[in-house]
Length: 463
Ligand SMILES: Nc1ncnc2c1ncn2[C@@H]1O[C@H](COP(=O)(O)OP(=O)(O)OP(=O)(O)O)[C@@H](O)[C@H]1O
Ligand SMILES: [Mg+2]
Image 1 (cartoon, rainbow, N blue to C red):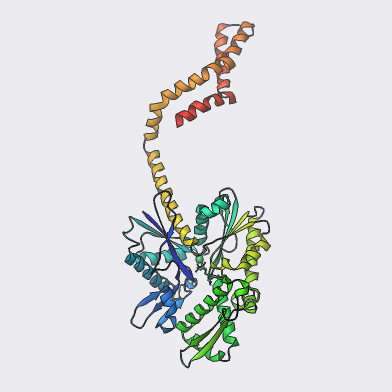
Image 2: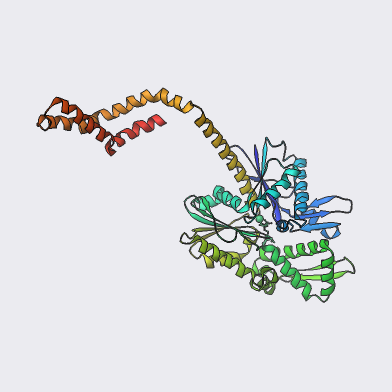
């Protein structure tokens, strides 16, 4: 059996797979040769559907292209469901084509993640898409649950701290959403933040693009192009996103104007030049200044308000560990903000945030399946008389060994005191001796001393 985890992210997607044998760690399965598939879809003039890097490269030349479409899924009127279906169908085709995915439902289960804030109706609608494409046994579960399960299973975190005995706050900051999951001693507990915060790195791309267009001498023409052509909007936003990622991946001294600026030639109508620049001032703008998408608040304000709300919701049991994941967790400022709100917590930043949801989903599939089999076995045992048969077959040996362990203590603690009472005349008649003995033995058998004597033979027998 193979357990697949499909993390269809708003910004980028990844797939993990694990087998049913005991010590298998989910491996990342490449789609068209890439471990991370940027969530971009494009249809070319000849009808060819492209996804990922090749779609991103040809976004402006495509008849139609789309990116960041998952975030519109809750709007049932939007084109999101159709794009999710087409994108996933191509992923599925690639997995079948490469031979990574063989067989049907009997040998595969696919777990697909969704933001924690999606309700049951949205999850069923989403799951239905994967059923119609032909994904084997698709199941939709929350991405934060997947990250949490993955964190519990992950060796690197386990070496760091035992999540089963500590409280942990998992924070997944993606392209369109920020999810929180609170895990107290291995058990997920609800955190009240409204389920999800509509906050993600995509907003920064939009702000960078908008600021760059406004600063251009051809801003009116550029605005027109982006309003008319979705393909050009996708292309420009992707360039803005890459430049932003590059800026934050470089060490501060490497963030030179040569490295962190780019001129794009936009050839929709008349050729136009769009200059994109990431520098300290722009970085400040992306994180600290109010923006329209966040209702006039800054990224920092909304993120920190979310953190404080989580803290309030948790109350006394402040998390000992914060587990940061999702692409945006690569920004150093996220760590600093988390330290401000949770100064007492140890903070662990995921080293491979691009894969944690996919791996976690694959773990969820495996664990759910094992649990299901376990329940079936237990139900079978309860329904059958196997347990009774085994017990009755071995009961005589339990009596025998228990008696061997109890006989001396019984003589010492029950029989001897009654005989002494008889000897001293406290018990007068022989017939009273018998009732006294019975009472004393009964009391002794309920005593801690008798239980201690029985512990060894009973546990040996159970083994
Ligand atoms: N080095 C980096 N610095 C800043 N942002 C980054 C960096 N690397 C990735 N990102 C941003 O992280 C986001 C993608 O993260 P992730 O893959 O976790 O999101 P997603 O799963 O696609 O989205 P969602 O979970 O919201 O559906 C993008 O906005 C991307 O630009
Ligand atoms: Mg994600």
